[in-house]
Image (cartoon, rainbow, N blue to C red; front, side):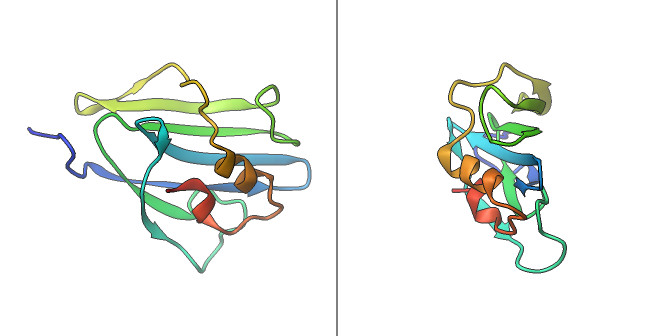
Amino acid sequence: MDIGNKKIGITYVGGGAMTNTYCGRWVLRNGELAQVHKIYRSGHLACSTSQAEVEIKEGDVVIEVYGHKPVDIENITIIECTKFEGGEWKETETPENFIPEKVKRGMSMYHNRDGGFFVK
């Protein structure tokens, strides 16, 4: 099966801040945010980790976090850090600079509804 740059599947991304906490989920591709497939504009979106869709490709790293405000590298719990390689998901080391500034802004916004903070 030639996976190469072919679409493997879809995952959801998004996040935001609540009164005292925040959450976020995003995909890194070669160290950068993955390209958006679809952004949702209606439905339950506030602080949801399903505000947008990203196509998964070989080598992508999915990161999901939560924490107590403010959004800070010292104040974060990593729920998931997995990499898609060889046709399967594998736990992986957290990459350096794994929270892009754009994602930090999205996770800091109270009741964020914009999945655009979590995609390229």
